[in-house]
Amino acid sequence: MKREKLPSREECIAMFDEFDVPENVRAHSFMVNKVSVFLAQKLKEAGEDVDVDLVDRASLLHDLDKIPTLHNHKHGHISLEILEKKGHKRVGEVIKKHVFHDILDEGLKTWEEKIVSYADKICQEDYIVSLDKRFAYGRKKYAHFQSPRTREAEELYFRLEKEIFEKIKMTPEQLRQVFRRLC
Image (cartoon, rainbow, N blue to C red):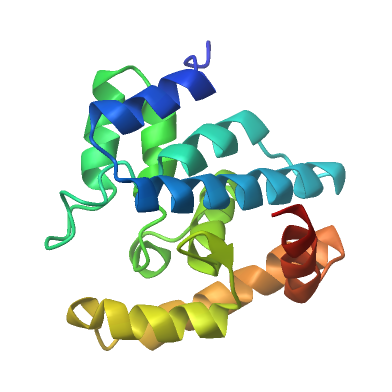
């Protein structure tokens, strides 16, 4: 079976203009992209089956619909619809799964879904923080989205973090140090 063609990085960046993605969301998306690609490459080096190009494109576009979906529960779903229409359903499916509570509702099954979702959670705006710090920020900024299941989702992200870093033989702090030097 033939795999669908991924959008180029240039096409992804052009979508930022097409869908009026603001500069702060773009900056966050670029940081999530850098972290995602780094983790994908490390996991691939560790022998995991990871589509680094899919991670690259999905992480770039993960917040394509962020602004129009701020006050509803359609974040990720709109991006999936957009990307399906453009012939990039696989990218849209990874994006759809990065939404915080999807780790509970549908679970993160592929490395691509896990990486993009995790990288989004540790990138606060355009810098990397610990999950603890990011979750505290999220509880304050998105208080209207909190639910009794929020803590359960947070715990699953801590487990995911452990799974990733055991595979790549690093710690989350070492990752933050790498990016402090790069950025």
